[in-house]
Length: 513
Image 1 (spheres, rainbow, N blue to C red):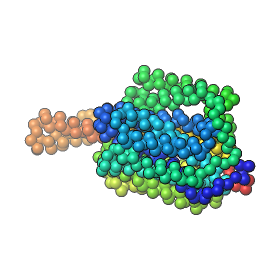
Image 2: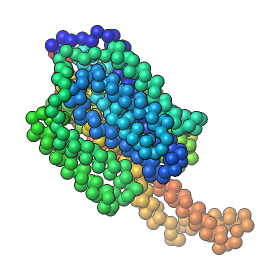
Image 3: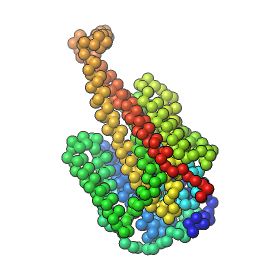
Image 4: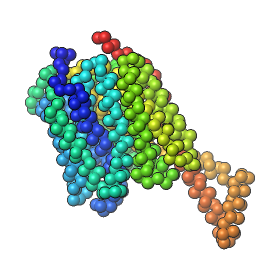
């Protein structure tokens, strides 16, 4: 019966409705980041406390996600989808008008609850609406929203914050939510094989374990770097709590007759291999999106808007990838397309690993476009392969599992930036310091030349010598930080190369079936 059903509305209108919901959700994962210091100032809280605005959203996004399938069976998928959009939009409004920091955090948490289910629901509805032979095209369009939104987020957030106020970072979501709500109400329908059974038994224990796992894991990831990771008793406790809760959650879901999340989907070979490849790919992609603004702001002196604008060409590359995917759809094996995308993305990472402090804005454009092209090129075919053998009846659950795992990967990828830059800076600084000795003729000559230069500007010999040493030390810190960024990009490239074998162990899609 699920093969015979076709939606009444035009596929184009369905796609636009779902894309609006997806876009506004992904946009909010990054748009508020650039405004955190302004929000902190408005509510008189510290920069560390302001990070809870991001953390609360990310925790809430993952908490409700596994219950998506159960909630759809209780209320009906369309009604639940509309509720999520409405909750997201209302919460965004409250965030913009929040009178204090506590209300802001509560509204941000509610916004995450609504937004967490939008992507798996959109993904499931889109794949069900398109015939199997056209799902590659559907994923191309869907992937454009997922990849472009986090790139536009910092640019739009920086512009709104600098030219208006931080409140508009949240208000900008409202028109998207209204448009998505109206279009979903008009054009989306529940297929006949999705039965609404009303309120029924829920795996409360599984849900409780999930909340403990996700909350402790996200707080650990967000606060690990500044607390020294497992040198801190606080982070260690969070890590142990998260690990125990995760193990118990998986055990509970595998043993339960009516699990919150049906993990039996992992028996699907393409789903499991594709999820592993896509999760690692997304982790690296989010790492590269997060590391570029830091590089440009810390070493090149860019402000938040310009550093966000530098990521703009990634969106251009993504659009080009979507066009190419549409042209070669069904003409080239999806595994080859996926392999090509991962390879191009790795090349983009290697290109960034060769940059230096003498680059101009234009030097960032080409590597950024390559990253955007490669990222979208591997997302589209890998996602299509991943869901190729999933039945429509299993689609909502499968999308929930896949997005939960992907969210964990994205959190790890984003936090890896701070870890890599901090640790590699220390390593490179140690190597460089070994060369700054009087036994090194080049170093001795440099100190003498700089000392003489400072003396020509009026400093005595002792002061000039100190100033020369301080200047060289600043250059040492700058160069070690640069080397850390470059090493990070090399590590990201090597991780992507590790994924490549996973692509060809997935089964080829047979469109004739």
